[in-house]
Image 1 (tube, rainbow, N blue to C red):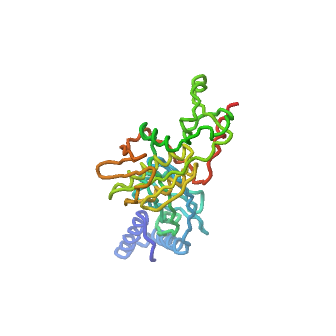
Image 2 (image 1 turned 45 degrees about the vertical axis):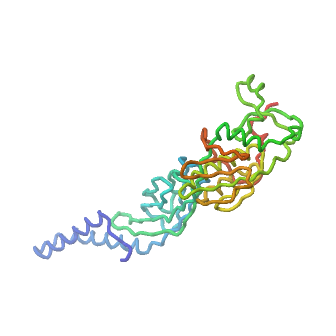
Image 3 (image 1 turned 135 degrees about the horizontal axis):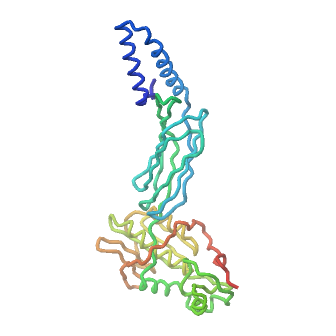
Length: 340
């Protein structure tokens, strides 16, 4: 029957039947009937079982966006009227890694596998291919499920070099420090905090960084960032723009980011939207003459222009930002470890 193929075990049994029938015909060995008949019945039952099997449907539970070189988990749940043992293989694009092949009971517990994020971008998973087998493992039938899902891999984000960080801080720091409001309390430092908020004297006493929290931080400035890339340099541009944008948002500034992929307006806390936009952008050039910060990825290197001064993009330690969400509101910076 179309779509049904014998397994190695099924081929061996089929070969036995052919040889046994030949021997019975040639030598009139009727005693072979006791072996031929059960084998034929088993092969027929395998074909019937697979012929009446309905195509399974799959629901794929996708992991959140993440950084390159990190690992997440994908879960596949199959729905079918008749549970059946099958070999399942989920199709992965080149930008993702994993071993999405397993023999399992389709219609039973979900199948899970580890997915490794390799390259920046929006990657499609699926369709999942199901090779169902009969209970004796004599034949199999293939199904291609329809469900496809995407996962977003962010660009890498780094700490900017000290020189670039200093220039960005000058742009994002309000001219009048009194606008920040009255001191409220100290709390534990988090990686998204600006170093200008660190209370160094208290940190020295506690052997751990603590930052000052103010009653009202006030509204930070709105800064324009333009990012361009020569052909084949989109990944480097995305990393540099993500590093600059992440640093400015952490300093409390709002950012209007223009890339070859379009324009996006970001408020402090919008790191998820920043990274999601840069995950999708390709190479190309935009006008950056009037931008506060201009990122350019060229064949001879990547530069960041701040305040009219062009500096090399010389990143420091890589940040882990895969857990940053795509929310549009600034996170509550009191939450972690408030110190009375």
